[in-house]
Every structure is written in structure tokens, then in C-alpha cells.
Image 1: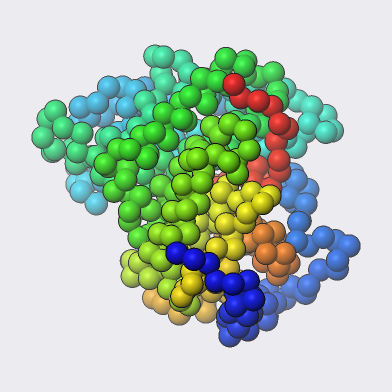
Image 2: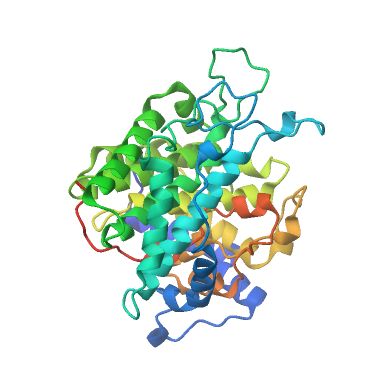
Length: 414
């Protein structure tokens, strides 16, 4: 579908911002005034802002051993110990809780690798500490390299009903939400490539694992069913596919065929399937947790936009001939991130007051659109704490913004 002309896009965007009053609402809700130009509010110093948080968390992780999938096994699983397996929470009985150990272990892996990688990046220019990269590499080896413990690159048994017929995969497309943490693992690897923690052969094997997972994402019927959903399930597919394609691209990412296909899909399918003209996500506001799911989806799509954008083409600027784009989605949600009580839809069924947290969508959008009100609001919000309910922590898909606003050193992954 063709894009609208820049002049019309600019006009429509300004009109929407004016109607929603995003800058006014943000300042009124938080008391923030526009920062002075010399403070570079569009590109806040994430390393400085997150310095203490990153190092405190990373130091606590240095003695944490890897816990790959093979550490846990469900008696209901027909899969091998190396296959990801999980069960639906809503089918569990009090006497037989759903098996979620693989989901939780993958979440922990992502947080661990991303935090240790961020600490390595943070200390490189001051007092380099090889322990962070070395320990992150230990976790990657256990999960993706060591034959006895590596995860198989597919989700055939995700969200499987325990009583499904033997001999069948019977996974559910909803299982792809549980592997969103793989996106930040993929984002961490190029930063570790410039250290001596991983050998060239190990880096090549890691890259091959994510290439195999991308092949499963793009070809398997279960994965493509998730791709075609008109909500955060489809966005989870898009982000993971973009992260895998970005990691495994050869040469310029602007020329990579996988990334080009994802850009085309975002422009021609995702925007029309998910966005209302106002910028809301109709299929998220209809759920029992409309606020949480809307912000979750906004973060997923924002991260995907960032991965798919290049120096020559900004996916953030895609808009439909007769509809909105991400600029409209961010403008719609920003006031409600600043002021949760202004949310015009029902409150979430659970943990509504634990949100919004520091949404990475505001940081990435503020940088993409040169719009300081978004980055200022991002900085003013507290990160979601480790003590928050598990559902809330899992709805915060990216834990280390430093890895998303910093460019790793260009080290070839052959």
C-alpha cells in the first residue's frame, strides 16, 4: 500500500498531537518542562541514567550459574529435554499447576545476558571488567552451544495442552509470547563479539542458531499463525523475527532480504491489522488487561521499528494512505503513560496500579521523531522493579535500554 506524501503526513501528525495534547498532557501530568537544547533531551545519556541500576544488578549476577532448559523437565512433555515446553495457565488446576519452568528460565536468561552485557558496555571506556562478558558468554554457551543442554530452535511444544494426543506437537501460537526474551539475547550478542569472551567459531554457531530459529519463524505453520494475529501475538513474532534477521544479516542491513520482507510486512499488513485511525490498538483494549497489553504491544512494535530502520529508511515514518502509523500510536498512548488515571478504557483486571513503568517505546520514539517530551517522560518514570508481579515484569519486553540506543563495534560474525 502506498505511503502518504510527507506534507500530508506532517499535517495529520500535527493535527493528532494537537487534538490529543500530548506535550501539554505530559508536562501537566509530570511537571516536566522542555529541557534546554544543550542538555540534548532527544538523546538522553542512558549510560549515566542507568549506571547504578545496571552495575548493581550485574554484580549480583556474577555468581549465578546458567540454568538451561535441560535443568527442568515436565512429566507431561512428549518432547526431548532440549525442546522448549510450556502449558497454558488457564487450563491448570490447583492440584496440577501449569508447567512454566522453561518460560521462566528463558526470561531469566534474557535478563541475565542483557544485564551483564550492558555492564560490559558501561565499563569498557572507564575500567574494563572482563567478568561481565565472560559470565554472559557462559550462559550463552549453555543455552545455545553445548550439545547436551542447547535449546532446539523451535517452539513446537509451547503452550501445549497436557492432555494432547501423544505423538503430536500440539503447540499453540500463543507460545511465541514466551520467547520474546530471545530478542534481547540476540541484541546482546554483537556487543559481546568485540570482547574475547566468545571465540569466532562460537559467534558463528550462535549466529547459526538464530538463523535456524528465524527459518522456523518464517516457515512453520504454528509460527505463521502467530504472525497473522492482529495483536501482541503478531507483534511478538515481528520483534523476534526482526531481532534474528538483524543479528544474522550479512552486509548492509538495508539490503538484507529478510529484513526487507519484514519492513514490507510492517508497512502493508501490521499497520492496517493492528492500528485504529486514532492510534489505539482495538484488539488490545478489548482484552481483560487493556492498559497492560496496549503498552506491551507499543513496546514490541517500537523495538521492531528500531531494528528494521536504517540510515536510509525509517520504518517509524511508515503510514497508510488512508490510516495511521507508529507516530499516531505513540501520540495516542503517551498521555496515558504519563497519567494512568486518564486511561479512557476499563482498568486492567489485575495489577493496574503497578503500571506503566519506564516504557522503552517513549525513549525510542523520542529519538526517532526528535521529540524531547517523550524522552523526558521516559526518564521521569521509574523502571519496573524486580519485586513487581511476574505478569508485569514479563510485559516489559526489554530490560536494558542501553543496548538499544548504543551501536556495538562492527565485528564481523562469520
